[in-house]
Length: 165
Length: 100
Image 1 (tube, rainbow over the protein chains, first blue to last red):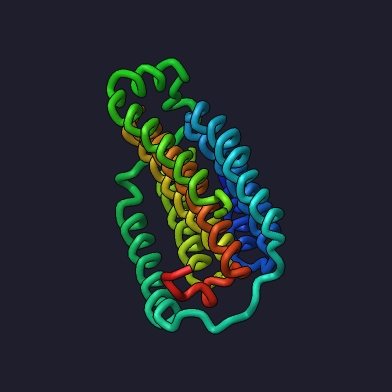
Image 2: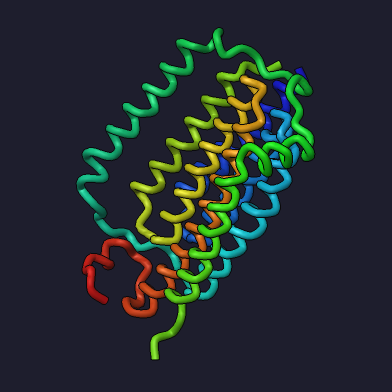
């Protein structure tokens, strides 16, 4: 019962924040509503027993990535979005495709609803130690590859944002 | 007790809103934020399936998604700054030439 109440509260906050991102015309309002979505998602991760993922979600996503976004919005002095026509392909192909995709997803989830079962609080709980063992034993090679990826991203960001002289 | 399908449906709703924002929005920074929203929706699905199968690997994948998202945000925002410096606009409809 408690789980359902918490899920409904934070799920509604998530969807409301996402809709606010879609409807707001100023980028800074969209960025702040995205931070709300990420915070509510962190609480949903906690309900699913992923405590370390929830902490990383708050620190990395809501902390680092969104600060970067807000910083760039303020640096470029981004104003209210202009009304332009936009791409016709996006309107006439993208929106019906999106609706078809969403209906298909709901059908696929709904038709397998009983097989998926229930999620209980505490039925599956991953301590940080267990996650670290999995990350540094089973997934050691992907972990090392991501460090190279981050190095390339840092160099790329520095080269791209450098002022030409 | 919450059915797992609720979590998956919430993930699908968030992903669909992210796609809609990607298609509708005209500001390049907001388009980037809608990509982050889609990645977050996928992360929720990963964690929900990790809970269902009692596997840690689903949560490890979330870390890799977060790393890719952070790298993508850093490079993408650098590209946005470079575009703004030459074009003086953030509207994607006005950025339609390959040359600077």
